Length: 299
Image (cartoon, rainbow, N blue to C red):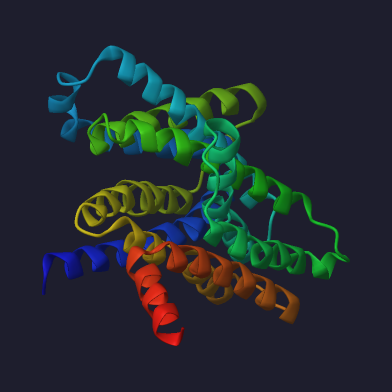
């Protein structure tokens, strides 16, 4: 098996870890306050990664560390909106597909902030995503639920984070950047929890079991395998593989929570998935070259 093929399997495993994290998180917040859970989860995950980052602290400037912490606030905002949406939602699969729209929101954010005009492939795929999002709300009489709005806000924060984080990823070791941003997310969650949440007097041991799975499997291991996989796989191939996360989430939610998937939601999720595949596929240099050759032969 080639190194690239192994890396692709690592990314495939990463998508499953990420989707399992939805189930773990939903179970944990049955006994822990949502923001407090996220604070503990990411603070603990950052401590697990910290020993692998000590050698990198000597090689980066303090200014870069502070700027990466500020970008970590965007990740924290996204994940805190996400966990709140999960706490008030019974449809994790639907939320996963809404969150995946961050891939399409990122070019719009780059256009507004950095004057990077979206490519033609983006405009071709955007209408399918909009129609898909509308269909997800069909069961509520075309009125989006509150959880959908929070998932969409989380996707917007992720798009912001992607744009700023991509600039720092080239200047800092990836493991250190990840550790810092997980730490910032954890601190934000704990501060918010202490400000607005009430912790239960007792927490069942089963909740701590789900918490351990969330920290070790869906956070630390997930980010580690994602980092290892992205080192050997092209960005285009990695992006297409990562699109599998909402599909795994839907399947797990149906199996674990018996989530109902009426026809409108199935079609809506399919439209969003198609828009992502269209955008990522047409953006792939190999596919674009193949289409150009096909145009030349047909003409």
